[in-house]
Length: 355
Ligand SMILES: *Cc1c(COP(=O)(O)O)cnc(C)c1O
Image 1 (tube, rainbow, N blue to C red):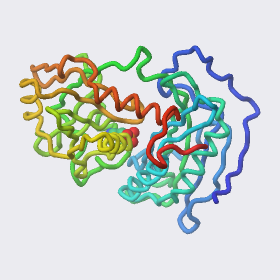
Image 2 (cartoon, helix red, strand yellow; image 1 turned 120 degrees about the vertical axis):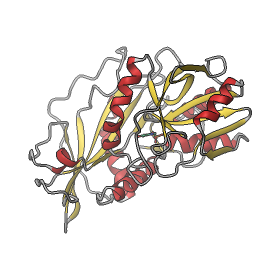
Image 3 (cartoon, rainbow, N blue to C red; image 1 turned 180 degrees about the vertical axis):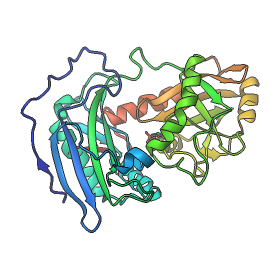
């Protein structure tokens, strides 16, 4: 059992009013969780303190070579007041998979889940309860050695901060327009694509900016070698329904293994739609859309849960997905996942963990 020392704030902030539109990632709760790592000593000093700035050497390795990873998950308030997490041990496992890739020492799964539960329990009053809202949880690890040489750090900090977030779609589920990026790439096999490292996001900024300027909300990434195969969308995995087959890109090393992706695949299988993990050529996808065979497209990720795709743009060609609206399976996945996450319906065994 992880021993966590708790120091409560003496100056609690005022909770955001329930009526405020809560924009993503701007407000933080009263407390934070921290744990340190030192070579020879392992992870130690688990504590919850008031939310506060960090003190780090300007030579801290995270600032120079980006040895950093993160996770993203949510806590939901059920109608009966219970606080629910969605498959948190999968976030713990993925954190450790990311850690392994960038030479950060792993954290025992049980300790990760205990830390998340502890901070969420203490700041439970911050969890909004309006439909679509949640407490976003951001665990992350940074390299702290004061050293300018290139090698894995010997010291780290594992920190968890929490931020109440509003409904991703305040006016209801709304199809997004996607820009197919042909110039820049996000990741290559053997690189960091399957790692939830901040480095992937800095690589994505330029294309995201380009898409925004053209009036598109997200980038669809193609494979980094041939720029032929669909990989994922911004911070979401992507699914297509072509005729009656549901397909999603096979992971293959450059794609982040989303927990929402896995959950959608499992729900689809339960409903009798086997999902095929494939290499999907963007040319074939556009041909299917032109031929009227692309009936649905949606992204999956913790922030939006399920995000219908209404339009794809590649070069000078703009394609509407079916009628540009929300597909039936997209809608069913969104409704079911959000109902499971908030405890309105029961999901498969073990998906929901009470805090
Ligand atoms: C986090 C992330 C996802 C979605 O993963 P979930 O576990 O479903 O939230 C997809 N792609 C990228 C690049 C990500 O960083």
